[in-house]
Image (cartoon, rainbow, N blue to C red; front, side, top):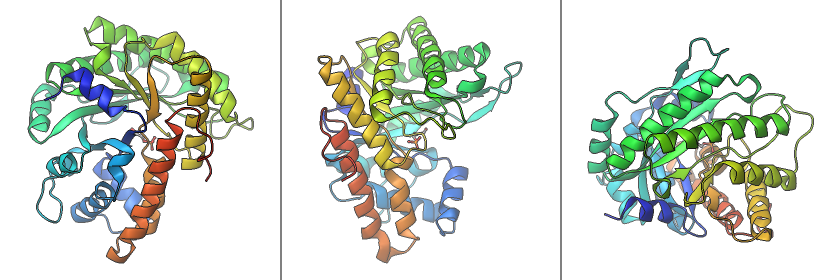
Length: 337
Ligand code: 13P
């Protein structure tokens, strides 16, 4: 198997990003219901199969993040998901956290759980073909408490160290939420605090920055803010935060979409890459690890009906192609196309 640094670098290869299709059973079931599909292990499997087998997916996507249920399932032809992904030229990843729970004495903050037994689970996931993993911490910028920052940074670092010890590349995802009416400056301040703490803990736990991928939020205005920052402002503030906090040895930064539309997320990613290139060659690749901004259109088009599968796959392909273009540097023509 490739070394951790090689896998991390391949995950953020030029023109490629990561498809996040790792919603928990509960979240995926809700999304299927909203899309008019009866949730079950079979419909969740069929939906993930539709995504993974989209023609040409490997031209835009280096890896796919799956949840425990999907990595344990087979495609309809009997091929296990991990094996199928590898055969399609797409690296298989696994979400290993167990979701969030409230953190005492933190003004309503949350901490992500899942460290207990993780070492053994990682070995089992590697056997099933996973070469990278993901752990998501969730932080509210408007009520950020130092205990929430500390607890989540520590858990992310413990997770990342266990992954590297098991030969698996950790995606480190501290998500500062975009929900709320806060302005972009609040997101910028909170994200700076969070990323500084995360990289401090990663270093303390002995994590090799060359063998991780950072998955942060972009620096954007809260969804309900009246003052929505434009892509140029998002790019400027995002690059300021990353330059201040992320070691140059990290090979790549793959942004989450956080509820942005595909057009908005891609316009912001294109602006981030254009500004980064204007200032010289950035030390890290700047790409995507979107969930909703890639898959929502496909899910809406599918209806759980085999006859709609090709249309749904076309929609996923179009969104992945646009994200890939946005990750390539100063390319603006594809945005909104
Ligand atoms: P979104 O792009 O929908 O935010 O999902 C990314 C993700 O992996 C969340 O953990």
